[in-house]
Amino acid sequence: MHPYSSSERNSTELSLWLNSSEANFSRRGRDYGEGEQRQRWEVSEKEDGEQHPFLTDAWLVPLFFSLIMLVGLVGNSLVIYVISKHRQMRTATNFYIANLAATDIIFLVCCVPFTATLYPLPSWIFGNFMCKFVAFLQQVTVQATCITLTAMSGDRCYITVYPLKSLRHRTPRVAMIVSVCIWIGSLILSTPILMYQRIEEGYWYGPRQYCMERFPSKTHERAFILYQFIAAYLLPVLTISFCYSMMVKRVGQPTVEPGDNNYQVNLLSERTISIRSKVSKMVVVIVLLFALCWGPIQIFVLFQSFYPNFRATYATYKIKTWANCMSYANSSVNPIVYGFMGASFQKSFRKTFPFLYRHKVRDSSMASRTANAEIKFVPAEEGNNNNDAN
Image (cartoon, rainbow, N blue to C red; front, side):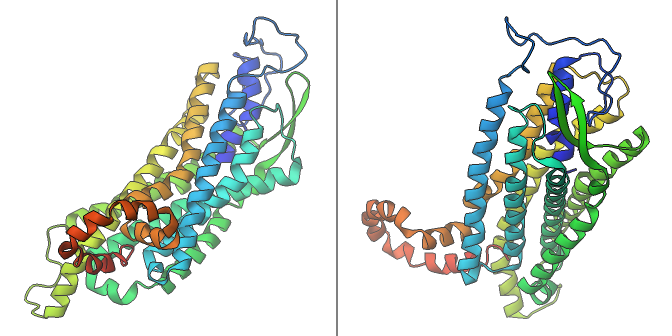
């Protein structure tokens, strides 16, 4: 599900959540509760009745989004730069990582600024074209993220279950072709959003415009929500789980066929199995972070749409806001994972920005000289780590 369908329409939902605890409205702000009893939330001791209430989340959430955007844009841009600058980083897995970083950058640029404005402002101000365009791009990027993570997990499964075959078939060129196909598939899967996304008129402390999805019926709405949940969350998570169950099953089995006395084949398998295991663990962490960050908002939206007795209160609004922040934060955490768990990324980053490490090198120069005999073995290990993302 793209974040816009589940959260950017918070402008509509906030007005309804705050202005009517009894209004009968859908997840997308349909049915503005006309004829229903309205109850205004007491947000201050004195209210002039002319301006909409300015709540804490009107500045706190945009501030949090700004931090996410700063960290995410800098981190993901560095990931793409390091991979493109260093030839040894252009491996199959790193191409998927670069694709993932690209989806995060587009997501941050197309999502965060527009979402941030909806908390301090009472309505959508960017027009009908941007309403459709932004929602579509956000759906595309989230869909591409899900498929890329699935491709990365399938890639790790392939080299674990078939380590020798993977040496012949896993190439950066194949990864690039797969990445292009991911974007094409994401564009196709995201086209339904263009049919339903539009500007709707509403009223909350004056006439307002809301960017949201308008469905012919409740059945269409629920079908669309279920489609997004399956395509952008459930199916990728199930596929990834299957891939890693295959990998766990493979652990402990011989890397090469029994009776194979080819020394080079056995040596290659022994040298790569440790590195590949580390990379697979990094991919597991990335996938788990995705599932944990996007799980709450996905479950909330399903509950909101399918539970017949769902009541929109300020408490549920705060829960949804928290879940929304969790999903957005996912776009900024991946570069941190690469920095802590990716040995090749650490080494390439030092090469790209050596001035950041000069002071550390000078402080440790004395210790390095005393351990010279041990350091002689490090280049060979680090040379292997250049294939960290294999």
